[in-house]
Length: 198
Image 1 (cartoon, rainbow, N blue to C red):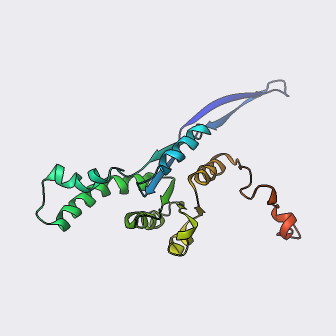
Image 2: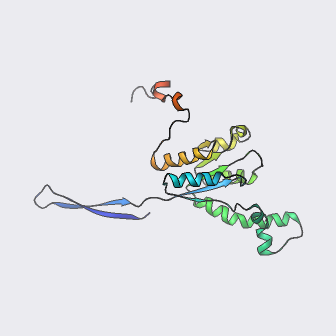
Image 3: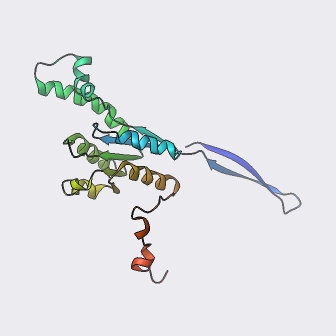
């Protein structure tokens, strides 16, 4: 982390004194977006991050399905059997995926209803093994099938806008309007104080 320094002069004695204090440069958060590639969820998150001016760098796997399948064969040469073709492509894609997940501050994994995202489940497990904060994104209908993944996540969102709000709260402490709108009741009013003797 880099630091900027400022000098503050305090007067109160005849000689005065100076103190060197540090101001840290703004942190850029690396957020890795893993998961299905058939909808615009990454664009929605990107637009939301930009719209709120969040200091976030978004990364992802290669989102071209064809390139992801054929990259190994294009670069290293064709294979006669499908398992070999898939293996060299998967290994080449893993160079990017493992590097970017390892560098991420937060990993977001999206599961959609129309496709089985085995690679997304693997990315979620890999992120957890690296002790990366995990945010899972999926429609409520998938909650049962993803209960173990959800249990490992620090947050489970239903739409990309919630992911942007999670990032905004994490970075700035900014909360959106309550999802439950006017029916929202603060926990103290709803359930009482958590610690009756603070």
